[in-house]
Structures are given as C-alpha cells and as structure tokens.
Length: 207
Image (cartoon, rainbow, N blue to C red; front, side, top):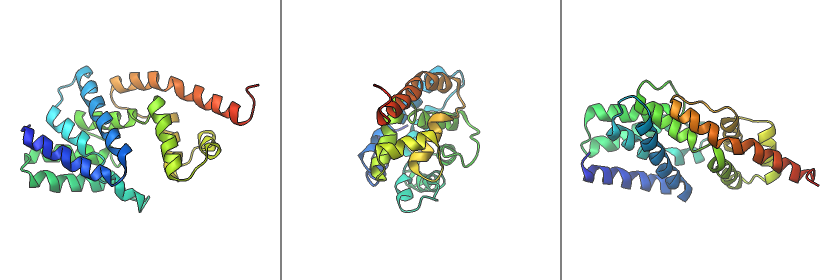
C-alpha cells in the first residue's frame, strides 16, 4: 500500500475512535498487532494490505452503538469504510475484501476469507485474558456497574448489556484460526482464577 494511503486510513480510523474514547484506539492498535502476528503463524496466504486496513477500520462505527445498543457496528462500519476507501482511491477489489472483514467481525455472517477470519480472531483475542478482564471493568465503569454487579454477570451471563456480553465471550470464545485458539487457551487460564478469587474476597471466603 502507498504510505500516504495507509496514513490516511490510520488518521480516519483514529478520528472515529476518539468519538468512543481513548481506549478504543488502543484496542485498534492491539488488534492490528495481533493480526500481523497471527498472519505470520497461519499457513495460508494472507493479503497484508487488506488485513491491516481492515484492522484499522474494523471499529469505525463502534461509537454509534452508544446511542443505540441494537445497532451492528460491523454492518455500519463496512459502509463507512467503503465510502472512505473509495474517496482515497483504494483498489475496488480490495475495498470489497476489507468491507467483508469489517462486516463479519461482529458475527453478522460467517467470514469466507482468511483476512476476515484473522480480523475476527484478533478482535476476539483482545477480549480474552488479562486484557479482557481489564476491559470488562472499564465497560462496567462506563455503564455504572459495581464490582459486585460485574461479578454477577460472570456467574450468570447475559446478552442484554456490554458487560454481560463480554463475560459470555470470556466463557465461550469462538475462533477460526488455530493460532488464535492456542493463544486464547493460554490467555484465559487467568480468567477463571481471577473471578474465583474475586468471589471469595467479596464474600469473605478467603479467611
């Protein structure tokens, strides 16, 4: 990719991320790094240009969900990405590939390209392990949930809130690539241990 195009994509993605908060852009950066690492370890041929642009743009519509929890930021983000990439002269075939990866990372449909599978898995991996636990409590703070209330979502998951859905992802992760599956198993060893200890401390069972 031309350096100027990549910089344009990065700038646009960062501008959209600011509308949700600082943590959103840091998440995008982590997903980009995960995508690069997974693509190195997977045996399939990966188009790095499509992968990296999709990683940068995968959450451009995430801020819109603040006002409407029923919105799918994958679908809307794909439309936003298409309009933006066309405006900077990105190749048409690659625009379609990028938009597919963005659209399906929220499970609206199954991914049919290796780039889309890696984007999905990288985004999901950033919800796992210690980072996942930290993110759960950021979401809890943003939605005015206490530690005790957050713990209850671990004991009884729910799809009706951001915190509840994240707890469900931690307990029942879904991946497409073998690389992501292996790393998720490593990362998630800490999760059950953490919440068991948290429950003990809340209920004073650690004496």
